[in-house]
Image (cartoon, rainbow, N blue to C red; front, side):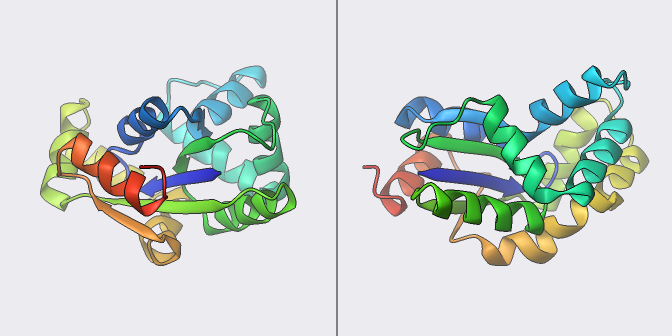
Length: 178
């Protein structure tokens, strides 16, 4: 089983992905970590989010298929693995994940984490960003598919403001894990 987590910046994707992986013994794979590792290997400044967004976008535009295969290869994916993917950002990447899962006879599910805008902005500014910087990150091309396309592809929508255990229980029931 391959489960993707999508949502806007600061919606709680990584926190949910870690919790889901821990509770249900899934392997955790982070697209952000993959992009950081690739960027570092190419000598790019990995502490700059704009650089990472631009680089990740270029990898996806170059070949979503290669991007997805690279992520799974780096994680030493085996067809029997149960995987949670943190940070699905692009419709083309999700489509490749679906194809990858099908080729490995692994069911796939996309979870969209929703977050009230007021709380999301509070979280962004708590990270030390000005509101202008946070909004600039939101406007980046890598974020354009999240609400517009991935939300509609998700079979499970979760309110990110509910208690973590409630989110996990809901996901577990809907995925047949509980």
